[in-house]
Image (cartoon, rainbow over all chains, first blue to last red; front, top):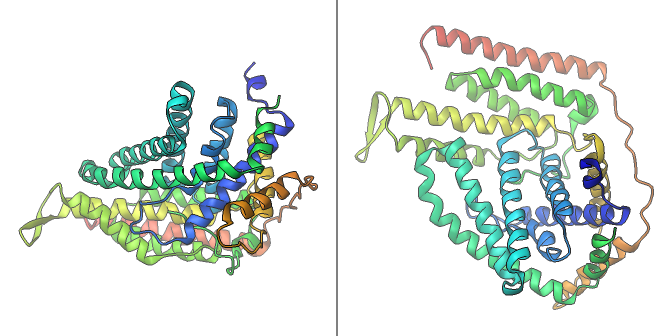
Length: 181
Length: 213
């Protein structure tokens, strides 16, 4: 039963793999920009998930998030390090929260709002992990910095997603495959 | 924290080891490194791992290593523990906090470097997720090949057109990489790396018996 649940159709598999590739590509683009501090990032890699949030189901969401974290881990070589743990937990928290919010109050929230929720949840989870595993209890003082950067980067990514989704024909084509059985 | 492959650098580890054996080497170096307790030996190991990671074609930023270790240590110093070493502008720098901060900061960097040289891009994960990852890397290769001139004001449209073209094009046969077996040179380096790691661990044990941390 679980095996049947985890199966994807050929079209779904292609769409998820392509979105995963787009995620990796955007992560690579983000890498090219200088960062003001080691832990501060824009979160461009969240863009593909945000674009298909209205067409994705729980199964494709899990696969896409797994592709994102394992793909980055393999490409960066960080699969066996704490970076992977941070990326794994942050990505899953963000993906599930965005998905749940969209399912329950999707009518009342824009892509910008969803993106902010995703960025904040990912940042908060990473702060908790850094408190527990790396910096110790004193690192709670960096929470306001993380929340502000999450708010700014989440808004920027949400706005980009909104603009792209309005004009994209590729997204419509991929979206059809994503919901195919 | 993205630490991508530098496209211009050669991955010498890929020439010597198969992805599986490379992973095994990483696991074997990880265990003694985890058990080390002296700051000096842990630092020596991290330096050695950074050389391995650079040989594996990865870009190493020593500035990042220093700033990360410094910030971890700084946060630990906020909670004084043990003997007070000195006072910096009214702020007590304690031995226990300094040691724990340095050990933790170096450990985290060491884990990253181990991961950088032991994980190959060609490492294939088993099962459905493995095949999905292979398909993803196939499309990723196609996407990074996009070389279109982006017209000012038409960024989204140009990008959308390119993505649609790649997506609609029939998927060519996925390239399956023939795994390079570990060479004799690879076995030699495998032993050398483990021996160097073992030697540092022995020194760590010796320093501990002398009460030096």
